[in-house]
Image (tube, rainbow, N blue to C red):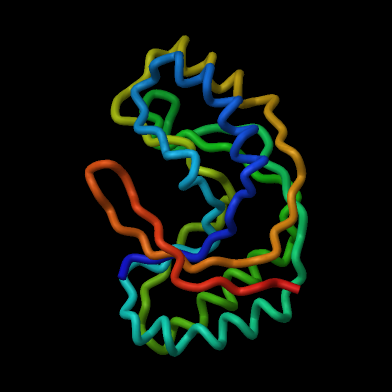
Length: 185
């Protein structure tokens, strides 16, 4: 099962993002936009993991979460991954993450080591994926989009639960299903 751990974004912030994105969508960038209801903050991508592994690791992840404080964050600014000439992903930034979020992420990841789950090795760059580029955008339009993102700041919100999602890919985009949630303290 293709899966990942993430923090959900509250509806009020999704509505703020939707207000931001409405005029940006009118720029007709060559993007495949992420459905606003699918926007989340990925903590750890697991890839394909068997259900029996998930079942064995779940109690350990729950115990880790119960030792981890909830925290407040803000969606702020934005940018892109890739190069200016060939951007790949348009994203909104995150500020306010506690410094120990990397330790939290790595501690959860270590629970999968005995099962030979190959975890993503890239450094954690907290962001919300807004869309994926299908083609190279017009430079002026792209710069206008980035200018719109630059000064965005959402309402602050509390992150108090971690969710394991299953991801099924389809021609209409990914379909996410909650497998389990863990409360933070």
